[in-house]
Length: 220
Image 1: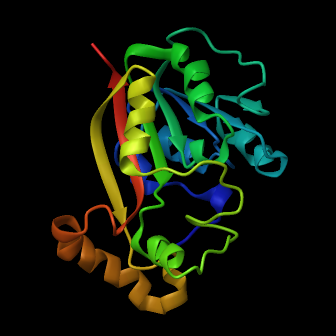
Image 2: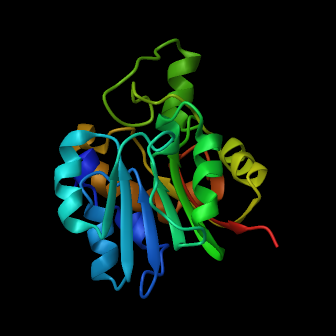
């Protein structure tokens, strides 16, 4: 099953969040689908930030607190240490200064809280092949999304988090065989599952990962 960008409940993010009883800030919350799913899973309070006006309409009805605006500039009504989780689900690559975004929001995280970041990686093998054979072109979605302002590899993503005083606790890889599985029909849905259990983790753990999900905590 696929969802639109702003209406994706992100089951992969849900899988790394222990939602029950927690207070969560979903940064770049879209229509609030992920936030609603976390509330359904027992989250005590879910707040969201979203700069796009259209999805904001639905998010307001789903989340406990909603802020519309550029997260680097908009006034934030949160208290220091208010949240157990800060979630950046495919957000940081769209920002001109992701380090500044982290610095701005980290004060709202509890001392023992967690930061969840998902980001696409430019080391995905088809992207490297496009560069090698001079076939680079921007697209409307995916790794080569024309709205991406920053690119990440595993090391650069981890390095950015470490620079903000965070330690990586868990790193997951989302594997694909194609940048757009829908382009290869049903095989696009089945083949990554096979690859995830066979060749990808052992031979090509980074080249076949199109996205990383990182769980980080403050350094002791």
